[in-house]
Amino acid sequence: MLLTLRVSSVRLCPGISRRPRRLLASSAAEEAKKITTPHQPQLQLEINGGTYATDSWTNVTPKILTHLGLNKHLQRDHPLSIIRQRIVNYFYGAYRNQRGNPLFSVYDQMNPVVTVQQNFDNLLIPSDHVSRKKSDCYYINQQHLLRAHTTAHQVELISGGLDNFLVVGEVYRRDEIDSTHYPVFHQADAVRLVTKDKLFERNPGLELFEETWSGSIADPKRILPSSKCMDQTKQPCHTLEAVKLMEHEMKHVLVGLTKELFGPRIKYRWVDTYFPFTQPSWELEIYFKDNWLEVLGCGIMRHEILQQAGVHQSIGYAFGVGLERLAMILFDIPDIRLFWSNDSGFLSQFSEQDLQNLPKYKPISHYPQCTNDLSFWLPEDVEVNAGFSPNDFYDLVRSVAGDVVEQISLVDKFKHPKTGKSSVCFRIVYRHMERTMTQAEVNEIHKHIADASVEHFNVQIR
Image (cartoon, rainbow, N blue to C red):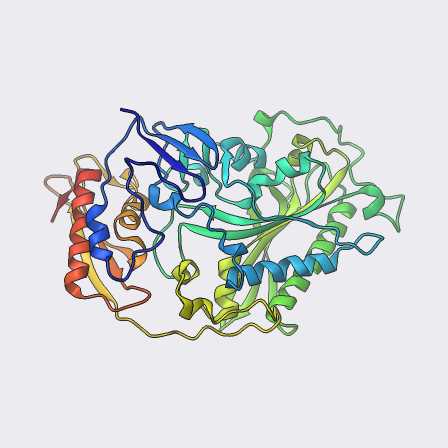
């Protein structure tokens, strides 16, 4: 029988149990009992009006799909919405046309379902890059996934004729579980393109491109990743003058954004780095609480990307920043799960009435942790990252226990010298955001995780 899971915002068809956005205070253990994780090879997904046949690449879970349409970055008085507006307002002020109107346009409700072409190929991400793995992304099928970054919309928007824009929205990545990682988070991504006339307005004799550059569109199969290019100071097509002017403008604007968010006295530094879609590339770090923290990545856009989008006579920069990272610093929010809370005690602390006055988060109360270990033998010939991915286990835990799991760590790996079988031990830290959990309640949820692990991974509990 063909089962169908419909997701338009948050809507599930009969036959598939609906998972709440978070486990309610009175029913964490009861909800865990209801979770089943059968394999449904004929399952068909309908997401945001599109129908997708599943295949061997499908690994997106019902739990993850419940986040579609929540749009926390647009929710009034939400800390993520406040950070979004601060960034948008800064760019509105930094770039204006001759009439005094904002030059940048903003796209904050783009469909998070994208193609592999959009998420990887258009951005020159190599076919063997680790970010493409099933262990890192939520695939709907082999050709579609939930976007892993808002950069996935770059070529689409540039092809539509845009040259100054911001994209804001949620992104989806399979990751570890702790206070700073969550499988769904939010990014702001920006692109600015300029022509020769604009960049060299005061020096019309200078050129964007080297005389030796042919201008022909490169064969996608022969495009080297920027890490393999010999000259990291610039791309072969660009003149040094064009790159340096573009770099100066970009860094000036982004340092201005950083000072707008963190204050004029914030200590910062630029660090050379590598991104597949920019060359050269940098990260901007700030000095915060005796540590250097990366707050954004940026660089000069690869010209091959612009050529794919039909733009041949421009140079551009792009940058991306995580909203949760900024909000956790600016509001002193200690746990990333709080951004998904609907608790009025949390949300009432923030207001959009004064975007410049950012209050520090005040914990309502501190609920105690409960910690349980789970050890199991993997099937024969299976090892960690060789047939068993910890991210698969983390997703299973999220599906069974929801957001009552605060952290998971792989604390031990062991290979039996005689049988050759591998054993792993995960330490799971439970803590509800709104009440104290009893050890008995935690033990029941823990047992459901163990049972689901046996069913899902064919392991043997130790």
